Amino acid sequence: MIHKFGIALAGLAFGATAFAQAKWDLPTAYPPANYHTENIVQFAKDVEAATGGKLKITVHSNASLFKAPEIKRAVQSGQAQAGEILLANFANENPIYALDGVPFLATTYPDAKKLYVASKPAMEKLLTAQGIKVLFMVPWAPQGIYSKKEIGSVADLRGIKWRAYSPATAKIAELIGAQPVQIQQAELSAAMATGVIESYMSSGSTGYDTKTYESIKNFYDTQAWIPKNAVLVNAKAFDALDPATKEAVTKAAADAEARGWKVAQEKNDEYKRLLTERGMKIHKPSPKLDADMRQVGGIMQSDWLKVAGPDGAAIVDAYKKN
Image 1 (cartoon, helix red, strand yellow):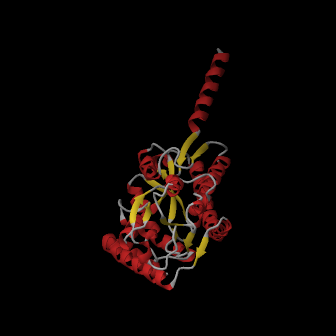
Image 2 (image 1 turned 60 degrees about the horizontal axis):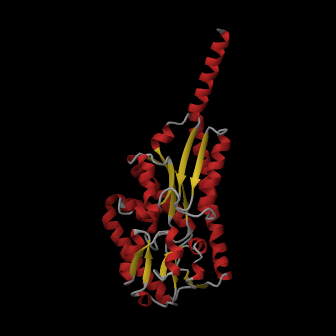
Image 3 (image 1 turned 180 degrees about the vertical axis):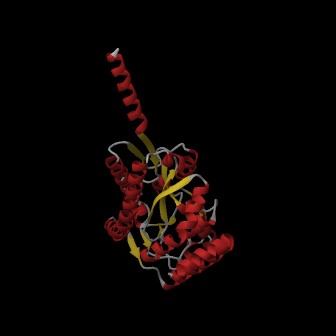
């Protein structure tokens, strides 16, 4: 009898341990060597170490589990417990998501941080209403123009096959008279190699990750905007954790955010150096190209304020006051 009772207790103990362990899938659209992905992998390791293995997060890089446009919906619906998105990709849902993709609003890392602080409460409110919690956000490098041919003004981009990966980049194509082509990062190398696109705007890291230098030889360092990726978690999945595990996730997320902002700035110069070594010409935009692109930015800022309404104006006012 005692023997059986002992077995029953052991079974209960095992069941409690099994129940206490949680496994999360975290899809991202970027390759393993990208600093965003490396930062997320470190976050997952930190969580596992801090929780003694009670929470294990599996990172699925390079759009292997869900494609970039599908990740937010997957987190929202609980198909994936967590995931990484480029906020600007979801501008069609709400203009607040597009804010850090508005050209020439915040073009330096200190300004990007101020914009982040000003917009974070509104962003969190939006996502909370969708059953999503923000874990952390990390910036990309300032955005420049990759082009097969050398360009001196926006007129040189008319008719060019232009990669559009977000509403903002599609709008730029419209304003400069380019032909927009919808291409996600995982398909970018093939699109350039086959001539499907001839130009696009992105960071030095994207140019390096996708070996843009093999197909396109010019990068114009316009420093147009600094978009951010957000790592999100399904609110129910987070709420199901015990208090100690929640605290471990929150701390690891804060560490990942601080680390990510630091690495982003360090990598910006490194990526430009690596691109140069591989045959890319890094150009300072001509005064005409700079003025043309700032005009595009002015139109887009004005358009954004119209659709974002009073909430959007309040964020921009708070940003400009700081």
